[in-house]
Length: 126
Image (tube, rainbow, N blue to C red; front, side, top):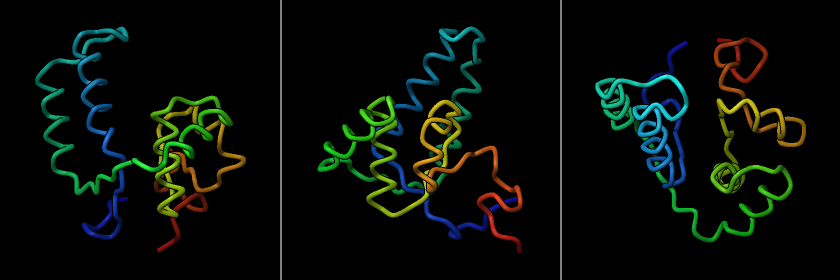
């Protein structure tokens, strides 16, 4: 189910680009098993550049980030996404199954990416 351009706003902490670059670098070097060809990594970077992301500084959210990390045992990176979503009163869509399983009961605004397009989950019927 495609989303019309401008229909949703994608808000991310400024660290997102670093996380994507780190993941791509690790994948190209084969540090998680299967190696990603460099050409594919570059395609992913181009796709990222094509997204209309609104990057937000997380300065001032340190206490909230720390709170999330301590309560849910997640990384500071994950805590930053959670704190930013909470501050913006926005849903946080994740593909991190471990994080989702840990927070889903207490944080109903954290949504599972795999539910995209499933009726009754987090999309309203048309």
